[in-house]
Length: 284
Image 1: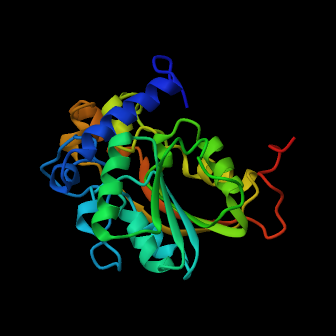
Image 2: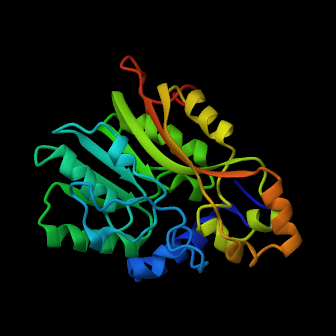
């Protein structure tokens, strides 16, 4: 995704800078924002995130309140699995996945923000986990060999990535034949007002980078995944005091009346057991 004023690389750098700041904050500072964007609201302390605290493996130090779902809860992780967490942040989903895969498995977290990688590694060291690894890299070009993962999870990350098609291709490449993913993300049902779509803070906050729900599902389909299931869907309400930073009172009213939906979805898909090395159309 590109805008007339911001290139792909500029958008990536924006997100990297914002999440570097977030890595140095605590959860209370981040939880009042839409995915840690800093657009604080007096109406709610938790716009996007779901409660992880009852899940085995949950560690409060790794939870910065940046997610929009519970993909690990739906990911069907088995003992001994190799799991990759895309946009692993401080390690929250990776540590929950580790509880599922056990000591015989392995979890690899990938994040392109150095401060997040540092924080996740510190958390893993404190927990004494030797089978959880964090690698700095771009999920559009994962630092992982092909056909290695049994399961891929991701929580509210693809909406931040301009080249979503490239990420889905990479998910296909890295999964083993027969492997699967469970990804939580923000999608749209209808068109956001341009003021929100173009607002840098809202982009880093998971909303402006979102695409249409149907287009999101089509990206998964055209890349060769099978048995695609919408595991969970919930509506996201952005409070008026956040919208008022970008819209007038009249524009907010029109937006509310438009029926445009901002949705948190968790999507599951499988790479066919007889799959080629990479997604359809990408092999030479």
